Amino acid sequence: MVALLTLTEQLQRYSAGDRDIAEAILRETLPRLHQIAARELRRERYLAPLDPTELINEVWMRSLSKGGWRINNREHFYAIAGLAMRRVLVDFARQRLATRRGKGESPISLDEAPAGALTKDGELEMTVRIGNLMEKLAKADPAAARMVDMHYFAGFTLEEIAEITGLTLRQVRHRWAKGCDWLKLRM
Image 1 (cartoon, rainbow, N blue to C red):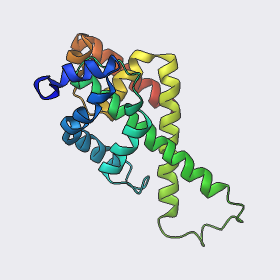
Image 2 (image 1 turned 180 degrees about the horizontal axis):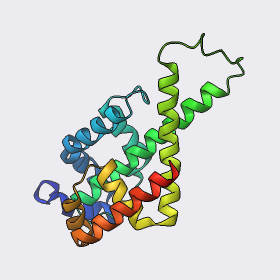
Image 3 (image 1 turned 30 degrees about the horizontal axis):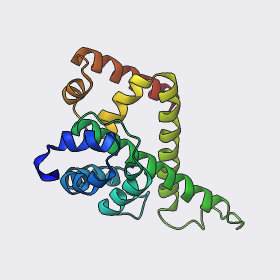
């Protein structure tokens, strides 16, 4: 019976609490999730020693398999998955920075630092900083944060976001610009 349902219908059943359908959803969405994960990992190349499949598994285990999501359609599902991937990567960056700073080892000078270490730490810190700023933006302006998440992190075009959210393209552009301006002022 699962094969006869569209992905949107499967996602709606999953949202309603049907956990038995989760594996069918994962099989059907895996190619697009893989594209989203690969893009996120390219953007954060120094961040996580993960491949796209491992990132998808981490997201699935941490967030999506537990349920509780209100998923309207496939695009909404991919937006949620992209957001969950970003959160996993931000958490990973926080853990790596905490480990590097808190092992009780004495600090080394810049001359003694391994090649590339400063770049990696800088990218880890930037990822954590962006994650923290996105959390603050979500509290200050949830609509703008959603546009930034969907466009920048999940990779949807502004036109696709308008279709997913039911907003006009002008409203989406306004909220996207507002979110970008908010972030730029704080970076």
